[in-house]
Length: 396
Image (cartoon, rainbow, N blue to C red; front, side, top):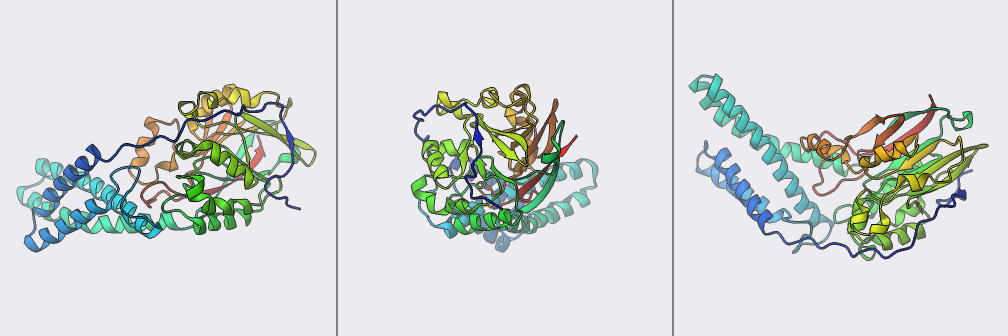
């Protein structure tokens, strides 16, 4: 029989300290970013519209002006409110991203034809490639939008654990991460996630951070469906960096009110059919920048774990993996990267994180990175779909 979210289980003796957290940071106004966007759009217009007559140039110029006027120039978007308006504004940002990338790719191809093709071939390609970019950009944006706005698919993953007790063979964890409830992700989107997770009938549910982009006052009603998550051993969550942007103390209280157990550098011991599983969670890797006493600490989270119990860590950022492996964890579940969210930005993730997505290994520890159950910013997931991960622990 399934229990409600806060299923009872034996807790560790390690408890987090209750401390004040610094206020949510204020992002500065548009300024230089607006000028940069304007300059890039002007360069794109000059590149793409030059080969065509004035009717096409005027139509293209109107599209570029509309894109500039609509798209956000910073993290806070003044002047328009409501989910539909925000979808339009962030959709314009996604359109700009696709347009910029495709235009850069075109410029590379033009350089290649100028060097290696005949003059006639190059001249023909100048016009044909510009037309291709103008057709491909709205198509890529539309496909990316549909992929982002649909309910996340279920990804099945088996994670080997050395010395796994037979009673824990096939133990299932439903992992959701990076929902980013906020300007464009609202209550119905969350309800569909909850419906799909509950349909998996998992043993345990793990939320690995970045649930929200906004305050409890703004978004509490939209996050409320998480209270309907159901599993045998309950729901456990850790903070992500966006919780700290949005007022982490208030969100920790709200998640607990909804029935989730928020793990702050601590662990619980799950009793399952006569076996024990240690489930730990750490604060976000960057939490100490907001509150020094919230510094992420896998070693503290592992203190007092019963000898011989498999140890699973929830840590928002993959960067926690090295210390988690040193602390003796068998498995780390993370998010944060969104898998890059859409090409080609996924190629840049490795500049900051050790892994981008999927199942990886650090020493003896397995690390799984969920690609994100929602999205952040532009409603686009071109080529990188969102996911709900159904993890099965198996013996190694």
